[in-house]
Length: 114
Length: 108
Image (cartoon, rainbow over all chains, first blue to last red; front, side):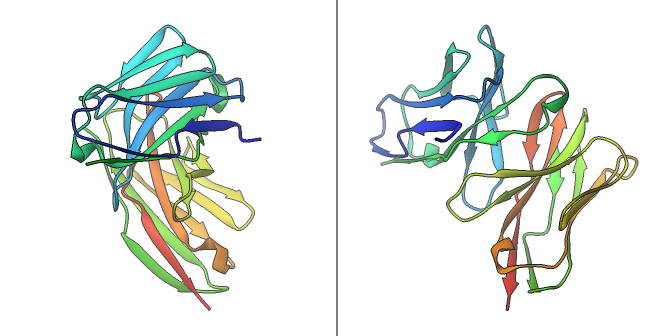
């Protein structure tokens, strides 16, 4: 079984709709991250959380919000989707302490906003 | 702000050695990571350098020079399965910033 799962894997939605992407992990890691990837670009950090009560904005948080429901669950919401949010979205986890440098990524969610 | 520069594409033949460079500018620095991503797949961790020098993991090695804000990934004995995109990423106080990636094409 996958250690980091994302649902849905693919989603097509319309401009103005609210959409939630979910991430779950069984690695027991405290730290969780949301990234987006556009073609030809690297991963851009949207939000990150170092524990259930800790939420931090990343490089490109405008238009997004997150919720850390439990240590194992971290959700990303687009309150009112727009076409330039069409991208591949990845959730990632890492352990705290000395091994925080290695991130484990989920399989990604391909989002299309029409 | 942060900026990372890597070549956009590199081509090499099977069995050869290839080096992918990464230069960075960042306001804070804990270390430099490298990730591999096959088309349509998730990035997977390859290596991490916190201190100057060379780290070796099998066919892959990674180097860091903090004074030069420079690192590289060295892939030896290239195999067809190494065809993928490779990303460097700086750890800026536990926030990670990724380069745009280098697409490696391995030819027979």
